[in-house]
Amino acid sequence: MTTPPRRAYGGVSADDRRAQRRARLLVAALELFTARGYQQTKIVDLCTLAGVSTRNFYEEFPAKERVLLTLHDRINAEALRRVGGRLTEVEGAGTATRVRVLIDTFIAGITADPRLPRLNYVEAVGVSTDLDRQHQEWVRRWADFIESEARLAATRGDAPDRDYRLTAYAVVGAITGLLREWQAHDPPLDTAAIAEEIRGLVLAAITRPAVPVEP
Amino acid sequence: MTTPPRRAYGGVSADDRRAQRRARLLVAALELFTARGYQQTKIVDLCTLAGVSTRNFYEEFPAKERVLLTLHDRINAEALRRVGGRLTEVEGAGTATRVRVLIDTFIAGITADPRLPRLNYVEAVGVSTDLDRQHQEWVRRWADFIESEARLAATRGDAPDRDYRLTAYAVVGAITGLLREWQAHDPPLDTAAIAEEIRGLVLAAITRPAVPVEP
DNA sequence: ACAAAGTGGTAATCGGGCTTGTCGCTTCGG
DNA sequence: CCGAAGCGACAAGCCCGATTACCACTTTGT
Image 1 (cartoon, each protein chain N blue to C red):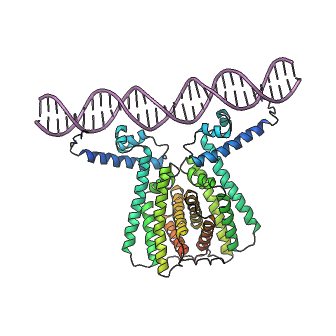
Image 2: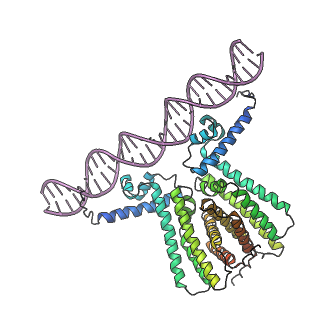
Image 3: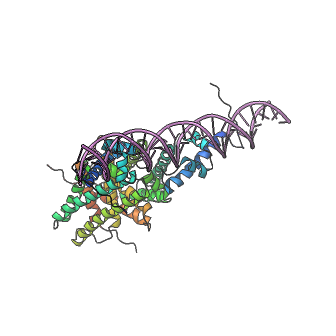
């Protein structure tokens, strides 16, 4: 095994240039995947828009699918990080406030760029089993988030003490559905109204009385 | 223009045999699209499983996408027909009963075959603009359904008199999300629990008090 | 300044799958 | 019983795009 000496080049190191190419490829991919669709986007198109050769592409990604996986993962991770950060800032606040912060932060972040929900909820669906797995994993994490918030509300007496797993999945689905509708709709839906709707729905969903168990 | 004479063949008419081939192709497509995925399914695979030649395929469908469009449309149409039929049977019933019938009928019908939600909510997403349009059209119809039910509840005094459009979209999204989760989950989720969850969610969503308008 | 190493673009290769033309067989009408 | 028409299987052509081999150019270290 010969370790090839890596020299700086053009002022910047090899690693830096690779990182820049990778970043430009991801930017181009977000644009093309959401504008033309994932399947319709050819690797050459990606490289052309990114100003990168096909050779470079394969140095960064083994296949087009990996680009989509990376984008999908990044979009969700950043959203979760944002929401988590804001929630710790309102540690002791009441249920209504925490739900409001959670929903508003998420909606504001994800609708800041319409391409994000488009990629997340449309283009990244039904592509491959790997992507399906990653989607399911993220749904699980978001559901965990909602569920723990519901449990917190229950300990405070704002909500009944019951199993919130399915409710959490339903809430995630409702948000997904509204955002998918939002990015596809013409004329566009009002994001404030959407946030408001989800906020009300979540509060109603977790504070509604538990149905009595059948004897 | 010469009108080619059409003769009966093998006891059945030409139209009948075409219809049968078409039906077998659709059955095969439902199976393969949901088992391997839409993109991964080749036209030859479809024809082999259906016992039909590739030539015949092109007599029935101009392209693979048309098969998916047909299946997607049929699944939704049948579900809507079923639900609509049951709802007319409980014309004068109370809000809780009507919502129960609506949800239970839908869930029972669509989960009778796990391939249906798989095709509807996973495989048919992000394929083409035509399919996107058709999806959006069906979401609109289902939302109309939910919305009119909410309005009916409002006229009876069971729910506040407000705009239910976004609530309807949210409910459709919640159902979609839960069913997508259902068909992907291992171990499988309980369909009765899902129906119960959605029922409670819908009732809570439409009966919750309207937020006061900001001055 | 020169030799060597690294880089990036271009172009050729390779494979897969859609699409259609053809052929031999079957069935119908007279 | 015969001619014609319909039918279905096969397979070859064709196009498109992913992947890799090559080569000319740039930069560096001595």
